[in-house]
Image 1 (cartoon, rainbow, N blue to C red):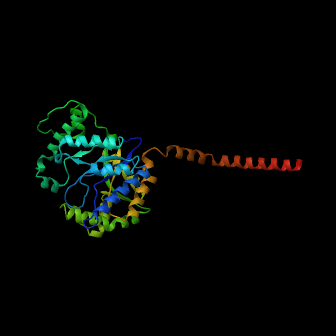
Image 2 (image 1 turned 180 degrees about the vertical axis):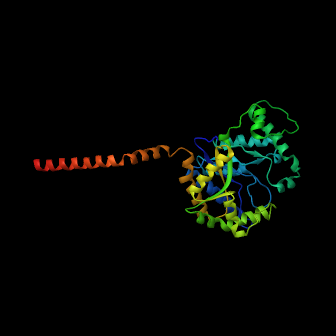
Image 3 (image 1 turned 90 degrees about the vertical axis):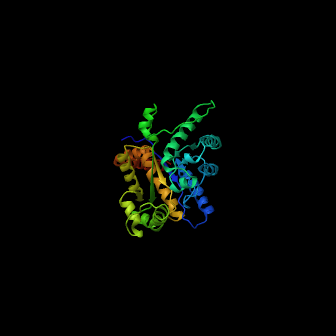
Length: 331
């Protein structure tokens, strides 16, 4: 297993907002959450692009990221993802270069073929060609980024699969740069965590993924969806210790990855959501970022010497007392 000395932590923000609520306020909560993550010391946030189905309401991750950059100081901001079949590659490259300047280098480019079938249908794009179109566009974008020479590009599409394709082209995919995204909600107990999101998570699964997108949903009663998803390890819902254990399991299963992205959900009240991220920052992230090593070593060293140190402490107090008494007698 290849695990980095310091794992990165962040979120994937689609986002998911239930149809019927004020979209302006929902987007403001998303920006507020990024400010909170920046204060907590999270590394990055990846912002989605979607154009239909009503729930995922960010149509331009670049515009959203520009706004977020003005409200944060250190958080890196990534497109998660720009759906390349929907855009001219030159405009994608141009916008990212502009964002790189405006954010002083805090942006990251993530690309994909487009996730929502309804988006492709609306744009008149053949779903069977989306990945080919993505590959073709990405090749053009990389050439625009790498070469200062103007050029005209016309080509059939290529096909690529991570490490194998990288090797074929003389490149290396570094596992420490891989990200894994999963739904997470933490509280002081597993029971509290599950109750926090029991209704909200059921809405997301049944109303959006099932009722809107047509995905298969768990064959369990609505109020048991969170239990099913947790027990089947689709989500991490529990305590910080539960989260630490599951991340270690995922590292073993995947053979190592460099970043953990919490899938941003709107499935609990704001205070519960913010508390969950705070628990991750305080108790989970340090376990994978090497920030506890010196502190733990110092504590263990002192604990091992505590008996001897107590003897020395008492001896010091006795000596101080004797010196004080002698000075009084002398005066």
